Image (cartoon, rainbow, N blue to C red; front, side, top):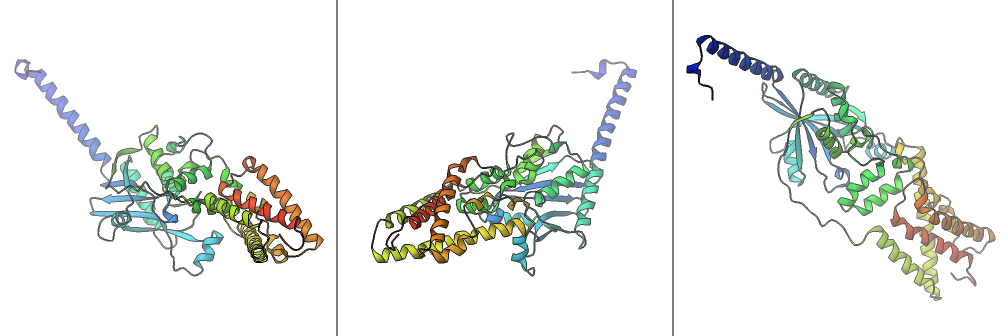
Length: 398
């Protein structure tokens, strides 16, 4: 320890002057960094039970210690009562908008997510005073009626990518260059992680049917950030410090028992086995039952094909294009459904072609450019089996 009593007076003065200047510099630096009196953080919310909340959520929290405000800017707002809501949603033309709400309070942002048992992680962003001011100004400009709406795209323009783009523009884009998923990861794999974790096998089946080959494209590091968790991880792992502090705002009850035995694969396999066994019973009633099943089965398969073509050609959903599920869900099945009992030659030729073509589809199932949902394998087998049964039908029986 330094004993000042033993030092000459001039040296004491020099040391005192140095300490004073050093303290002044530290004070000035801290004041300069905090002159905005703003604190901006990224809130990352954990997934919820509903399908729309399965992938989590992101928002900006802005605390102004001058005005004593604590506001959340949320780009995930939409108007459920909007005219033509469902049609706009299906066609990919639904407008989302940014809204502002209190963070605290009984009806605030935090209370809502706590009530749904959804966690919330806060990352305080490492921003200069001028950057904080610029970001808040940008957010408030977005709140204006003429600026707040945007056409939502789940993969490329959503509540999380909007926040990323603001940070890129107002601060630094280097955090977008470091991948947070293994090299070669695809969009479909990214969303499967959440659907599998949350036990949403049937939602996964529906999504895999609707989303086409573009969903199997390899993601860039920046594209990975369409998911809230990935943006959070990108900020934490950035080579340039993007976060000054991080905290879990409150505990939640974890539910680890979300998987169900009755997955699509199990249910459709049981259905296939049941119909297959019925085919060996030559009872008139059973055969009539099978004829009715065939009509409904082929009709709904064809109707699904028509929906896939509609999603491909008549909507703005880019990920619904080039859908290889059309290899088995043929729109023409809606027509043949009305001829399942016919013995005409062209009907038998149709079913023969169907059985052969779908057999080839099944052989190439794991080699297609689009990852197919394995829960559909029993469905395709059932289409092959019932088509073959029509080809080899004798004496009016199946």
